[in-house]
Image 1 (cartoon, rainbow over the protein chains, first blue to last red):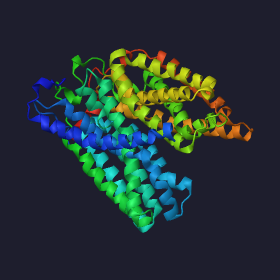
Image 2 (tube, chains in turn brown, blue):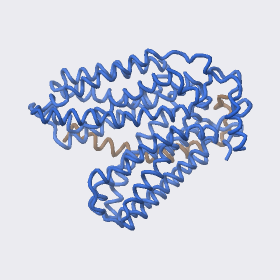
Image 3 (cartoon, rainbow over the protein chains, first blue to last red):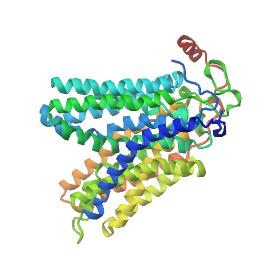
Image 4 (tube, each protein chain N blue to C red):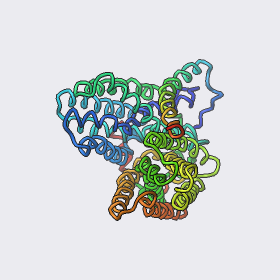
Length: 44
Length: 441
């Protein structure tokens, strides 16, 4: 049942990159805003 | 809609982003507070009224996860993600209509009731699938998804605030913001619907597990086992203890150091709250992944035992050292997040993968209970202490002792968890469930 990543054809790699970018970009934005706010603990 | 089976060569690394696209969206629920002040001024609402859509949404999350779990297991993750997308998105669209026409009940119905169903079904939609794709690292896999729920608020909070600033905080501006949210989240969640696949598994009658699949327990049987209720207590106690800090984080750090030479400003307190959110998120992925290495029971021993110690440190020495207070609070919040994220993998260890999503849905009622219990304890005690003329750190002394007690109860419940008795294992097809499945095919 466990899928083996070695079975993955190279053609899937762009799709994997796109999917992770799709969710990673907004998450990075949220984390950036979080870090900006969190630094106030040490500077505020 | 039948569960979408992965074609040969499909990568399992496409499944976590599918799950994240749903969890990052529905995690917006924790950023509802951004809409509260504009709604209060535009529609003349009280603070209690403006909290209603969120509260109903969380109640619906618990109910739909508990009652819809079995259906999610039968219909598969794509069906569940589609339902989540439709409900969550149309909740916003109904709310847009409500704001535009100044009919507040439509916002409560839309965001709270309809959107809340999307929250519950969306929350459990990828759990079982992720565990099946990552049998070697179930903690890490579910940790990624459940971290997304925490991350959703981090994204929505500044994004929604920015939108309200641009569109205006009057009723038409709020309506436009709701409309954009509904459409944007529909597009964002669509990735999950399109990408999610269930792994190929040995065929068996009526979708039941193959004989070689190890311990497998149905959701109906699971709730009749002491193991389920021990885990329910564990999760409820761990979440209550975490909320104890989260609920009063900003006033707590201010009060603790009010009488010292280095008081904490409101800005610094806001930074502390943000740091707690980061710890919550990091705990979800970090501790849950660690549970794959050290075991589920052991990691909950850490959450509950070390968590109680951290609370004791805050109670005894918290007002003497700011770094100690901050560090202990961060550790507690990381355990809070870890407790959420490790629960599905713990369930998988005990009950197998057969209906783990449905069992997880039922376990989430512990979260709903803790969501009421935690704030109630902390706020009620703090109010009583204030009335008694206490101030500073002494406002929280009793709450902290109660939180330690709750964690000790959770620790004891975790110690009572044993392997499930074989009489609960799935051995032969259940005629009633088989008939249900047959009717749907």
